[in-house]
Length: 218
Length: 218
Image (cartoon, rainbow over all chains, first blue to last red; front, side, top):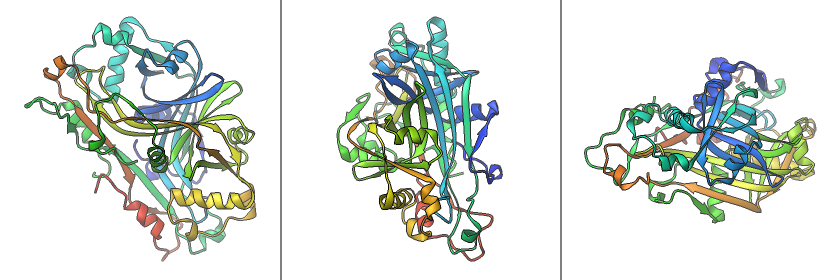
């Protein structure tokens, strides 16, 4: 979840962005999507790990999961991916807001099966933990059978970006209140080995590389 | 978004939690909710700032916003609040997962009006930026008229927490692969004053206090 560079900040309150590269950058930066569907005539929003592969998004889960079954059966879906980048501290409550980037994708998922499923699971793991797929054994037939992989094409989408400085009234700018932006930073901390890790097994490159991404200490 | 203390880690793959205090702690820690509703017979998921006040959640936005109007008119809603706490790096792809806390609230919103609206907006601002409401001027009648405030009682909810160490098969534990947890940390960086800030206006206590919450540098 990289912070929007200050140089991108505008005075527009919110901006619809139509550039697919900006959409892809957000989908690649944020690991958790919120998937909406209608279940029993009610809206349901479920958080789940999501990765982009070319022009589709992939999610996965247990074959026993009811919401994944509904999606696999073709339920209409809304996939929302949000990065919260900063608090906008304006001189009035009214103008106070947030910097965010938010993508909303509409469509339907279809199951990924057979050898495509194995390849998709490798992709999911390698997007979440780059380089990890070659560090672990291959999935077993039982594991593959217990896992549902779903793909949705990136076709209908919108992207909104809020990245402005506070846009206060002239009277407020001339007044006593402070204004500015408080960036939200995030990153991985130091890796913590499992209590049952065998002696001598060293931290692999995949984990070492992710753990180096520490914006607040940089 | 505080990280789950390692002492809370269990070997359970996921845990339903019924303690309201744990729910409140999550709602108070995470500033952005994903609100699901049905619009034009399709699911729609919108990210929005959310705060808890006692036994209700508050959201706000422009009176011109269509999704807020649908909610104000009584559309069924699902409010999902998620903290992504860590990557779980297991010895197999199958057991790899995430630490997260996720609350799902079901219900309907009602508009907050009149003097209750002003008080609710103070609450929203003070939960997002503690102490800020007394540092800014009062909202104008025009600003209040342009703002929709909605409240939903916290009645129907579920909370799921995943905070386990990797739960690998014995064969994998005896094998060559590493296992552990990569914590996700987040916090505010240093405040950046607006370009049009008047000379001599100092960073207020509200901003200074939030900016001190820097887990990665702590």
